[in-house]
Structure formats: structure tokens, C-alpha cells
Image (cartoon, rainbow over all chains, first blue to last red; front, side, top):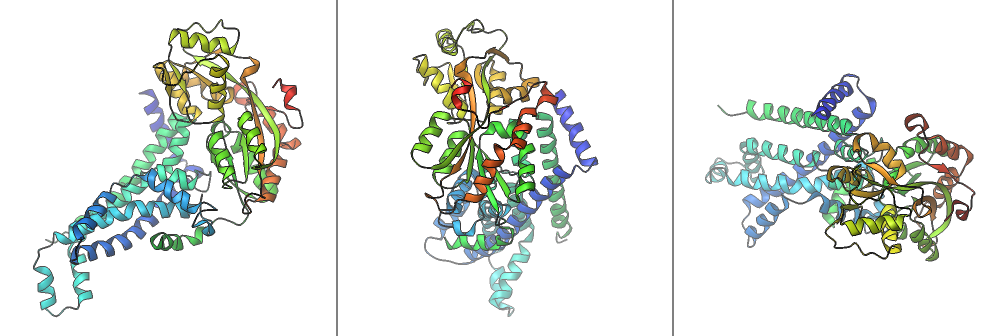
Length: 232
Length: 273
């Protein structure tokens, strides 16, 4: 118990004194996971909408695959991305292993199926006749898709939160492809693992608390947007 | 593949600086904090950007074998000799040593405190069936531990009292402390974590418990992408007077004694290997 108390005190001290290393680590966590989430939104919402609206043989299989992908284990993603990005691997020419860029790549791969899956469910959950109605009012196909996405924005924002929450909290992929390099690719989760290994439990607890605070702030912001736009 | 390429394309702006150098090393050098002191000095002097990947010695050498690291700082002498013999390294130099210690709870259920040698120690542990926590991760510490069992003619694999954590040194020490088991650790990591552990040094100062660190430059002849100049610069730095002085002083202010002893230029035999 005493340790948790020490951790809380340490977390408050680190935040109040604006500890430069912790600030950097926090900022990098936000930057990496934020960028990865944005990429996954672009890919996931496009793919999810297409998947929800199109009809083709094997659709159920594909949706099942996407839904399975929502639980893609980060270490598995980390391992495959590492092997691909090795200097002598198929994508070695990119020279991005052990960089924040590699972490964004891995996290985007983790988040994209989550966003895709939730998008499919959100769009399919809209009233079935809505699509016909919009088209009947003279909208083009592009306009129709855009309106559908706008209509589904509440569950889609939940998808954003799930995607971001999935990647900001994962450690397996980040430590493998980023390397936990001090001042360069160290994020809150990898730093927590390292401080635990070093026996600095108070620091590890402090970093965990900062991570949870960061998650809460981002989700609070997104929830505000989500709830404000609730159609009355 | 296309999928991956699209992703990678978006991340190019944050790609590595051209003078990056990959150092694969053991967890003990990172967990003790030694590299946090040495690396910034080297980076400032040389202009290289060091990407320190702290893994076990086994994994570090595996990375070297695949050309995925430029320079290694490891402590698994038998495997290192094999690594060099197979031509994976172009140079291997002695950097420093400390020693391993056998730790356990103060109650010492297997009565190893009075054991004269490390071989006798592990015999007593196995006879008593007392819990022993192994790293189990092919690290230098794990290699040393396997050697101890072998020298005593015991095969602990699969025994109920023998558990492998598969974790780093710090984490394994935490597990041993929680479970009140015996374990083998390098003195540096133990001293760093000592305050919270409640584990005691029960056997030490046996010549078989020596822990020696070498710096190895990965052979660019095998893997042309290896940063040869950077690896040499780092290895030269590690055996330089300046770095050796820092190594010898590291930890004195915090623990009252040094965690590592600088050995550059010495023959390994002079350490009693």
C-alpha cells in the first residue's frame, strides 16, 4: 500500500515539476498512438463502410476475419513487423526499425481492424431504408456514403476511443519495434515495463498513473464531442 | 505487402538519422543504469546516435548473427567464443567484469550458506528440492546458471522445484523475492534492486561465478549493412581510458562500492577464467 502512495506522490511531483523526461515520454506516447489512430480511422472507416454497404460472396467470412482482427495480439503484430523491417528483411530498405515510425506502423495495424469492425457494425445498424431514401432524394453515391457516416458518428466515435485505447495501452509491439530507446522511442508503457524491471516501483506506478490520466483526458474530450452532437 | 507499404510510406519523415548505430546488449547493463551514463558521452563525442536494444545476451548474439545489430555488449563467454569462431564477429574485446551471486531467503531452507563451492550449492538446492528461479531466457545469466548445474551433474529441467521465469534479471529477482526462492543474479542488478527485495547473498566469490563483459563488433563481411565504423568507434570508446574510468566509479556514490570493474587490455586468464 505504501508503495502505491509513494507512486501517487511521485506522479504528482513529476507532473507539477514538469519533469522533462516524463513530459517527453508522455508527448511521444500521445504522438505515436494519436497518429496510429488517425491512420486507422482513415483506413478503417473507408474499409468498414465499403464492407458494410457492399454485397458479395464471402462477405461474412471477411467480416468474421475483421472481427477476429479486433483482438489481434500486439506481440504478434510486433514480431511480424520486426521481421519485415529488419535491415535484411523484405522492408529493410525503409530503415525504420527501432524508430517511432515503426511504432506508428505497428499500432496502426493493431487499431485498423478495431475501427473497421466497429464501422461495419455502426453502418449496418442504421435503418435499412435510409440508404434508399437518401438515394431517392437525388444524392450521388458519394454523398450517400458521407451522410451514412455522419449518421453513424456516435458509434464511430466509440470506435475511435476503442482504437486509441487499444494502442496507447499496448506494450508488446512498441517494445519490440521501438526498442524502448531513451529519449527517442520510449513511451509510457515501455518505460513502465523497464522501471518495473529496475525495481523502481514508485516510478513505474507514477508512469502508470500518468498513462491512465492521459487516456482519461483523451476519452473525456472524445466523449464530450460525442455527447454534444447527440441529436435531440 | 501493399498494405504494409502504404503504412510505412506515411512514416518516412520520422525515419532514423543516417548515423544511427544499433547496440544489442544485456538487460543488466541497462537495468543497472550504466549505459544511461556512458551512451550520452559517446554520442556527444562521436556524433553517432545509439539505439540501445536491451535483451538477453543470447538474443543479442542472435541479432548479431542476422546482421540486425552493429555492436554487442554481452556476458556469455562460451557462446561468444562460438560466435567469433563462426565468423560472425570481427573483433571481441574485454570491457569489464563483476560477479554473480547466489541469492535466497534469509531462512535458507537448503542450507547453502555454508557451501564451499557453487557446485555444492546447486547440489544442496536440488537435494532439498528448494524452489529455484531460473531466467530461462538464454541470457548470459541463464547460460552461467546452466553451466553451474552441468558442473554439478544435475539436470534441473522439468523438476518441480525448478521454475523458469523467461523474464529479465530485475523481474526474475522480484519473482524470487515474492516466492522466497533461490536464484542466480549478477551483483550489479542485485545491488541496484536490493532495497526492496529481502533476498540475501548466500554464496559468492567462487571463481566459477565470474561475470565477464565483452564488446563485439559484428562482422561486416557477413552483412554489408552493418555500420562498421560506428561499431568500431563504440568498441574503442568502451575500452578507452575515459569510459573505463567511468565504469570503475559507477555506483560508488549510490551503493558504496563499484558495480563493475574495468578490465580493458587485460587478458581474461588474469581474471581467473
